[in-house]
Image (cartoon, rainbow, N blue to C red; front, top):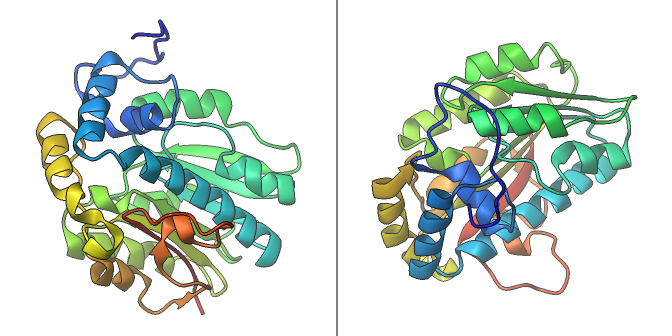
Length: 269
């Protein structure tokens, strides 16, 4: 690595010869937990699609605004963060527990480097609970089963799915994952979701060649979707204002530019 920092952690699944999303995303937002191969692929994608760094930062900022909204305005005290990625500043538990120290957060990821860093860094308040489970988004039943050891599924839960369903290539499977997880949480729970789009009104056409390069040179494979398809993930839910918009513009001050990544927060009636 150019900065001499090498992520730690050994696992049979850890392949440092192939760029991996969690580490490339970390590189795009200015982190140090990435390898040279991640930097090379990240730079190439950014050359093809320069707005990718803006998307990464906008997604991260959206997370902060959404968690604060849920903790402060909606009184949510339980968060299930699926596909958390590598820890950085202001993670879900830090934002939630800053508002309510008794908040309970379960992080879910299946990347070995994320696992190592999460267990080291994701420590919360004494009053609350911060836990990490190693599970795959493709296995929603396992996620619910393991998360229920920490979260009370008779009380509202905020299900966080930021930039994760784009790694579930089969659209019907992606919708079924959302349905199964939301079926396990009670009325008053929320779905917080971001997803990349190729819609031209958000400038998403450039996602297509960039994702093709990604899928040929990195892991896991990724897909963008139309706003119509992304909106269907919220079927049966009630969107909080301002609805589904570019994640950079969701309840954001100063009217920032749109990025081709939708974001929304919805409540289960």
